[in-house]
Image 1 (cartoon, rainbow, N blue to C red):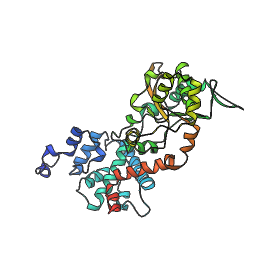
Image 2: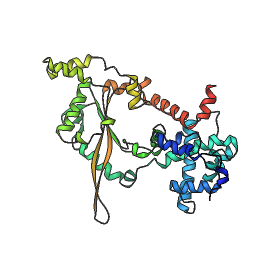
Image 3: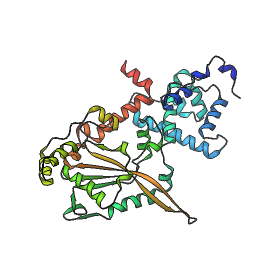
Image 4: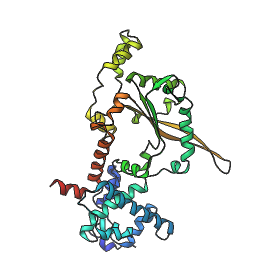
Amino acid sequence: MVNKGLLMNVNPWRSTSVRAALNGLSFIDEKRIHIHSEQEAQHFLESYGFDLDDTMDVKELESLRQEAINLIQEDLLMPDEVIPDSLIQQKDIRQYLINASGHGERRLAPWSAAILRVIHTLSHSHSYLNDMYHQPIRDQIFNRFNKHITRNDEGCFLGKLKLDDIEFRETKSRRSVALKLLHKAENVSADIFDWIGLRFITEHRADVLDVLTYLRQEHIITYANLKPSRSRNTLIDLEWIDKCIDSGMSTDEIRLEMQSMNLPEVNDNEVAENNPFSGVSYQSVQITCRHRIKIKQDDGVKMSFFFPFEIQLMDRASFLNTREGLASHGEYKKRQKQAIRERVLPFLTRHKSE
């Protein structure tokens, strides 16, 4: 039982957990958790889903602890910053919970909280369906596209449409997923929609519309299964195209004029809403689709489920722009890691700014 004497001066209505639930906040953004004893820490872990009497659970927790420490050391710390060695050696997660609650050595409290934030995120950095059916998911999604793709001496083609290239991303690493989740409020893997993806690179901007049209007309994807909140278009000015069509311009005339036009202006707030780490100069069309996967299990029973994947489209000039400057992947990662650092290690970022 929890020692109620330790709680007698704490109003339960002021519980950070209760308020997080009411305010829709992420657990990892709480300044403090309230664990007052080793027994209470064990109850917390049991509620979370880890049984310390289960050898497999203990082994998994230790693996997560080591992975969390490695992530912090390799991705978030400055050269002059080090995790206290006593924490690196401490394998009992209950002690991390006690430290983070302010009932251990004071200097270990913020570091313990940081490691717990990353452990929590890593524990959610997987998808059961993705883990179990990795290959058939990819085969069923990519095969729909591969039937229409040819590569020869003349280049890469989707049907008869000439492409600069098409790229397939077959997997997303656990580290990459964890870093992505660490800057998302929900902080769970259900919020990851790009476990796999495709990128179409066209010669001109107008060709992007041709690719989308082809995908629709050939029923490679159904737009009924798009996730609207995940659609992002910073490449094609649809209002301008509508005005051109209404004025009687032909598709070829519109296509030719679009080649010499400036890219649409992108609002900083619009970019931040879609992805706070993409630079304003990163311009593309991105859509998230869901495909119905069918699996025949070992017992012969068939199961089906929808699985998300991302399609990204950009013209050659926009693609080349992603290789340098503010739109580059390297700059994106810098902005992402800085935001994660401020969230996971606020005590260090405050210290640096003082």
